[in-house]
Length: 146
Image (cartoon, rainbow, N blue to C red):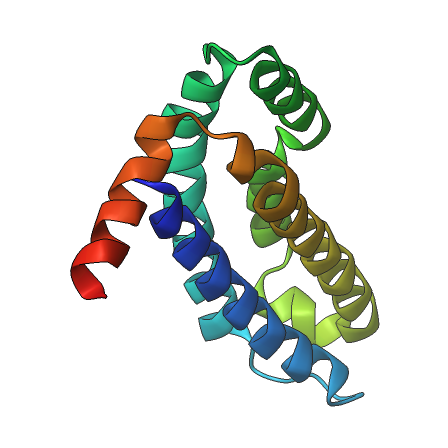
């Protein structure tokens, strides 16, 4: 696994989130968004499993003190994204979305803003500090492709 895989997952998550926001922002009347929400859920859970299971633990044991500090700060700030997203998915059934479209739109925008902020901050601040073993494979793959 390398950073390029995590970044590609971020790009995919961002794309799905944009699609969902377009549906939510595009109409005052309820729209069918279930398929997009579940697409996002599957992608996010898979991504967080890698980050929380491998990447963050690796960062927290990195030789570089700055990498450890930033990873710990990020983990404390944003560590429960999976739990918050799972709660969001559970609370918003298709029936409730139709009944409370305005509130759903508001909560969806907030959730997507949280996700976008995490992605941006990890890409810009955390991933560049990753140990060499996370950077190597991506560099090797780029050399092969070039």
